[in-house]
Image (tube, rainbow, N blue to C red; front, side, top):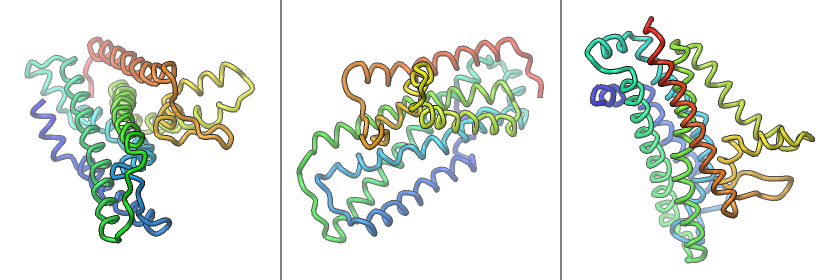
Length: 261
């Protein structure tokens, strides 16, 4: 874990993604201010606004998980680690746990920076900061952060499974792109299908749930949010099932397959 954490700190991709989120927050703040100003209903509203941009996390972070899973095969370090007495199971789980820590850091960075920059812009420009709907925005922000951790963990489990199965970064990256955009297609194109089965596949897809808790899912002209116990249970069960299946498949594979670079 210490060795992997050291690698993560030195990882160029990790630093690049962190810098991208910083620049992205600044860019979003400027765009929002240019279009409608920085007026707020309450002091926590920037967090609920940031939740609507969390979709971009799923276009960037899975690629890091892909490279992080395959770097041991690309550079040959996995053989040295296993030869030193570490089990293959602990090798993979160590990487997965550190990827989740990286996810938490990027979420903290995105929401934290966006919140601080938005409030600073509102104060500097003298925009109104009210006290309406405080509880609603706070609740939405907390749910969005919690769900994003869970769903990014599911994406990381799936992508790292692909990386461990393929072992080549180039092949794993292609598979990762198919996984990311395949989820987008499942959510967008199948929801209006005439087939009940295809609509169910779309409704239970990861991206559909992500767009619902982010407040970006719409059915026609109506925005659809999570509502009721059934929706929340499904929103929690879908990523947990993905994580369980992907981790199980990966651990079985790495235990049985020879390490050949």
